[in-house]
Length: 402
Image 1 (cartoon, rainbow, N blue to C red):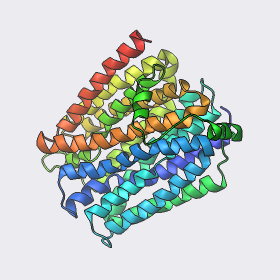
Image 2 (cartoon, rainbow, N blue to C red):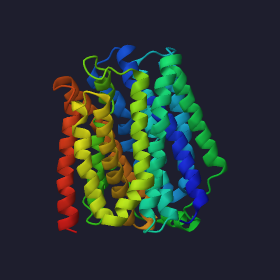
Image 3 (cartoon, one colour):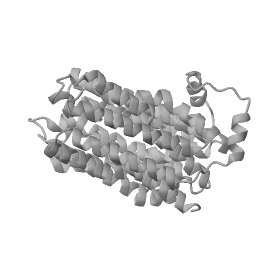
Image 4 (cartoon, rainbow, N blue to C red):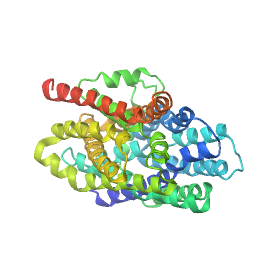
């Protein structure tokens, strides 16, 4: 693979930043319930506001990265993460004990969370079509590895030092990633393409919702966006509700540290899928079949979580989910990228990440709603049902209508 040094820097940047993000995941639901005393539906809103802001602003960053380069967007994103984490730490420490400020901190973090789409655009800049899945897999592995250590660090540190301490650590990690990007990363989008895009007369309004409908209806790549959206929505049902499910005294009865370990295990499995399994399966059955297989595994990986009454069965289900989620998400992004011209990589991948962010907003809101009004199993059952629908769609559209 060409430009290995660039890929290594991007891998480290995303890993460090996502490690900081992973630290926060097990803290939000527990803090919201135990300190702010809010209900499950509101917890879903808090978990989802980050992604709602991503939905609104990621296309903007993608659009700007096509015109001014990937590096400025990455740097701005990481500095925004530092500021938002500090604001969140003030809430967790009791300096500003307010649910409104908590929501504001997560919204601000979502506005500047452009690093994943920018990193995907970097991969498209420096890889060939044949290497694209491997490159996207590297980013996915960095994302997954952030969850290997992040949630367990967050759970253990909060258990021993309080809620705010791990969030300060998260802010420090984002600062390290920003410095790494500023001083080591080299721009991957040529100045010629940047200038061409800036001079382009093509009208584009990032806040015009019609751009999403236009992208989704595109015959070349719209189907991959739909698959990605539904898969992310289904998986996001468990954010905010899995912690509540695992803490139930009549169920698994886990504490914060143990829940952090579970998320870390999920991250380990996700990283192993990206590093070892994806390449093998992709080579044997091809990208299209890999995408369908991943969707199929996710049906059971999501649907069976709510029926996990002991740790062994839960870990088995998480392995299935990690395989399904890892295959589906990585291949759908890779196939999308291969269907888009080089001059539009940032824009289209930004729109796709924006739709993914909308899914990550709607997923926790839906999960919190059905958890509160239907029961603790239903975020996982409905997630599995949605994956069944998208599996059938994937087979019909990709295999029968290509």
